[in-house]
Length: 174
Image (cartoon, rainbow, N blue to C red):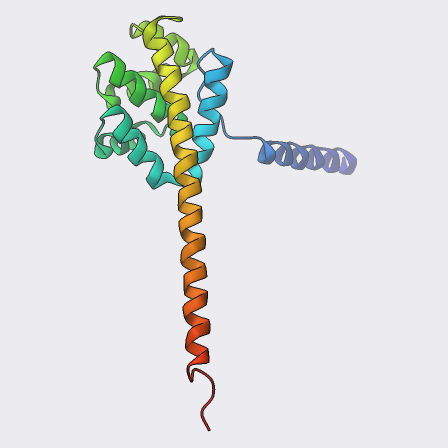
Protein backbone atom coordinates (compact mmCIF):
# COMPACT_ATOMS: atom_id res chain seq x y z
CA UNK A 1 0.00 0.00 0.00
CA UNK A 2 2.79 2.39 0.95
CA UNK A 3 4.61 1.61 -2.31
CA UNK A 4 1.47 2.29 -4.34
CA UNK A 5 0.95 5.60 -2.53
CA UNK A 6 4.59 6.62 -3.11
CA UNK A 7 4.37 5.62 -6.77
CA UNK A 8 1.12 7.61 -7.26
CA UNK A 9 2.57 10.67 -5.57
CA UNK A 10 5.72 10.41 -7.71
CA UNK A 11 3.67 10.18 -10.90
CA UNK A 12 1.58 13.18 -9.87
CA UNK A 13 4.69 15.26 -9.23
CA UNK A 14 6.23 14.13 -12.50
CA UNK A 15 3.08 15.07 -14.44
CA UNK A 16 2.98 18.46 -12.73
CA UNK A 17 6.62 19.13 -13.60
CA UNK A 18 6.02 18.16 -17.23
CA UNK A 19 3.03 20.47 -17.52
CA UNK A 20 4.81 23.36 -15.82
CA UNK A 21 7.40 23.48 -18.59
CA UNK A 22 4.95 23.30 -21.48
CA UNK A 23 3.97 26.54 -23.20
CA UNK A 24 0.47 27.96 -22.88
CA UNK A 25 -1.90 26.87 -25.62
CA UNK A 26 -1.74 29.12 -28.64
CA UNK A 27 -4.09 29.97 -31.46
CA UNK A 28 -4.53 27.20 -34.01
CA UNK A 29 -5.19 28.18 -37.61
CA UNK A 30 -4.29 25.10 -39.62
CA UNK A 31 -1.40 27.01 -41.22
CA UNK A 32 1.96 26.19 -39.60
CA UNK A 33 3.58 29.47 -40.57
CA UNK A 34 0.72 31.54 -39.20
CA UNK A 35 0.60 29.39 -36.04
CA UNK A 36 4.32 30.07 -35.41
CA UNK A 37 3.81 33.78 -36.01
CA UNK A 38 0.88 33.82 -33.58
CA UNK A 39 2.94 31.97 -30.98
CA UNK A 40 5.64 34.66 -31.30
CA UNK A 41 3.02 37.41 -31.17
CA UNK A 42 1.71 35.91 -27.94
CA UNK A 43 5.21 35.88 -26.43
CA UNK A 44 5.76 39.53 -27.40
CA UNK A 45 2.34 40.44 -26.01
CA UNK A 46 3.11 38.80 -22.69
CA UNK A 47 6.44 40.65 -22.54
CA UNK A 48 4.84 44.07 -23.06
CA UNK A 49 1.04 44.03 -22.99
CA UNK A 50 0.39 47.77 -23.27
CA UNK A 51 2.40 48.10 -26.50
CA UNK A 52 0.74 44.99 -27.89
CA UNK A 53 -2.86 46.09 -27.30
CA UNK A 54 -2.11 49.57 -28.64
CA UNK A 55 -0.55 48.05 -31.79
CA UNK A 56 -3.51 45.72 -32.37
CA UNK A 57 -5.90 48.62 -31.88
CA UNK A 58 -4.04 50.77 -34.38
CA UNK A 59 -3.49 48.01 -36.96
CA UNK A 60 -7.10 46.83 -37.06
CA UNK A 61 -8.85 50.07 -36.18
CA UNK A 62 -10.41 48.55 -33.08
CA UNK A 63 -10.75 50.69 -29.95
CA UNK A 64 -8.65 49.34 -27.07
CA UNK A 65 -11.80 49.33 -24.92
CA UNK A 66 -13.38 46.83 -27.34
CA UNK A 67 -10.24 44.68 -27.24
CA UNK A 68 -10.29 44.65 -23.44
CA UNK A 69 -14.01 43.87 -23.48
CA UNK A 70 -13.40 40.88 -25.76
CA UNK A 71 -10.58 39.68 -23.49
CA UNK A 72 -12.71 39.98 -20.36
CA UNK A 73 -15.83 38.36 -21.80
CA UNK A 74 -13.99 35.36 -23.27
CA UNK A 75 -10.76 34.93 -21.31
CA UNK A 76 -8.90 34.35 -24.59
CA UNK A 77 -5.14 34.83 -24.76
CA UNK A 78 -3.24 37.40 -26.83
CA UNK A 79 -2.95 35.31 -30.02
CA UNK A 80 -6.67 34.51 -30.02
CA UNK A 81 -7.59 38.14 -29.37
CA UNK A 82 -5.21 39.15 -32.17
CA UNK A 83 -6.99 36.74 -34.53
CA UNK A 84 -10.39 37.99 -33.35
CA UNK A 85 -9.32 41.53 -34.12
CA UNK A 86 -7.87 40.65 -37.51
CA UNK A 87 -10.93 38.66 -38.61
CA UNK A 88 -13.27 41.34 -37.28
CA UNK A 89 -11.37 43.93 -39.32
CA UNK A 90 -11.51 41.88 -42.53
CA UNK A 91 -15.14 40.76 -42.19
CA UNK A 92 -16.62 43.96 -40.76
CA UNK A 93 -17.79 42.25 -37.57
CA UNK A 94 -17.10 43.50 -34.05
CA UNK A 95 -14.15 42.01 -32.20
CA UNK A 96 -16.42 41.00 -29.32
CA UNK A 97 -18.71 39.08 -31.71
CA UNK A 98 -15.78 37.24 -33.33
CA UNK A 99 -14.07 36.48 -30.00
CA UNK A 100 -17.29 35.16 -28.44
CA UNK A 101 -18.06 33.03 -31.52
CA UNK A 102 -14.56 31.56 -31.40
CA UNK A 103 -14.80 30.99 -27.64
CA UNK A 104 -18.07 29.05 -28.09
CA UNK A 105 -16.46 26.92 -30.84
CA UNK A 106 -12.82 26.93 -29.69
CA UNK A 107 -12.29 23.28 -30.58
CA UNK A 108 -12.73 24.04 -34.28
CA UNK A 109 -9.64 26.24 -34.52
CA UNK A 110 -9.19 29.55 -36.30
CA UNK A 111 -8.95 28.07 -39.78
CA UNK A 112 -12.49 26.70 -39.59
CA UNK A 113 -13.78 29.83 -37.87
CA UNK A 114 -12.25 32.10 -40.53
CA UNK A 115 -13.73 29.93 -43.27
CA UNK A 116 -17.17 30.04 -41.62
CA UNK A 117 -16.86 33.84 -41.46
CA UNK A 118 -16.07 34.09 -45.18
CA UNK A 119 -12.25 33.96 -45.26
CA UNK A 120 -11.37 31.02 -47.50
CA UNK A 121 -7.95 29.34 -47.36
CA UNK A 122 -5.71 30.79 -50.08
CA UNK A 123 -8.00 33.79 -50.64
CA UNK A 124 -6.65 37.35 -50.75
CA UNK A 125 -8.23 37.90 -47.31
CA UNK A 126 -6.37 34.90 -45.90
CA UNK A 127 -3.07 36.13 -47.35
CA UNK A 128 -3.79 39.56 -45.88
CA UNK A 129 -4.42 37.93 -42.49
CA UNK A 130 -1.02 36.21 -42.65
CA UNK A 131 0.81 39.30 -43.89
CA UNK A 132 -0.73 41.48 -41.17
CA UNK A 133 0.32 38.96 -38.50
CA UNK A 134 3.92 38.94 -39.78
CA UNK A 135 3.93 42.73 -40.01
CA UNK A 136 2.54 43.03 -36.49
CA UNK A 137 5.21 40.72 -35.14
CA UNK A 138 7.94 42.75 -36.85
CA UNK A 139 6.44 45.97 -35.50
CA UNK A 140 6.32 44.54 -31.96
CA UNK A 141 9.94 43.40 -32.15
CA UNK A 142 11.11 46.82 -33.39
CA UNK A 143 9.09 48.56 -30.66
CA UNK A 144 10.64 46.25 -28.06
CA UNK A 145 14.16 46.95 -29.35
CA UNK A 146 13.53 50.72 -29.35
CA UNK A 147 12.12 50.56 -25.83
CA UNK A 148 15.15 48.61 -24.60
CA UNK A 149 17.54 51.10 -26.24
CA UNK A 150 15.62 54.01 -24.69
CA UNK A 151 15.74 52.38 -21.25
CA UNK A 152 19.46 51.69 -21.63
CA UNK A 153 20.16 55.30 -22.66
CA UNK A 154 18.05 56.62 -19.78
CA UNK A 155 19.94 54.42 -17.30
CA UNK A 156 23.29 55.59 -18.70
CA UNK A 157 22.14 59.20 -18.42
CA UNK A 158 21.07 58.66 -14.79
CA UNK A 159 24.43 57.06 -13.95
CA UNK A 160 26.27 59.95 -15.57
CA UNK A 161 24.22 62.52 -13.67
CA UNK A 162 24.81 60.63 -10.44
CA UNK A 163 28.58 60.44 -10.98
CA UNK A 164 28.77 64.14 -11.90
CA UNK A 165 26.87 65.00 -8.72
CA UNK A 166 29.42 63.16 -6.59
CA UNK A 167 32.28 65.00 -8.27
CA UNK A 168 30.79 68.40 -7.44
CA UNK A 169 30.89 68.21 -3.68
CA UNK A 170 28.56 65.23 -3.51
CA UNK A 171 30.96 63.49 -1.14
CA UNK A 172 31.23 63.83 2.62
CA UNK A 173 31.59 67.25 4.16
CA UNK A 174 33.81 67.71 7.21
